[in-house]
Image 1: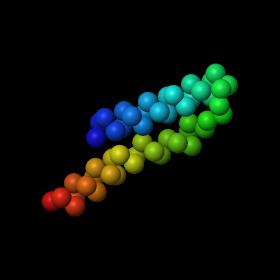
Image 2: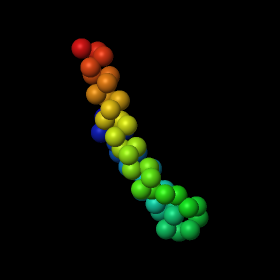
Image 3: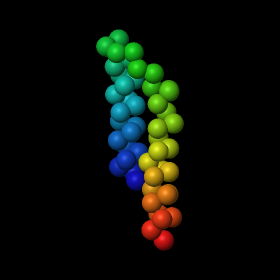
Length: 50
């Protein structure tokens, strides 16, 4: 689970870097709720397997 959260966080940092460098206008704050997707995925996966 930690690896999935780190992957999403790395993508958010990358997109904000692109925005700072004016390469592409990415709204990183709009993607912030995506940090909860891996948590929900693993919680649902755990409930189904038990």
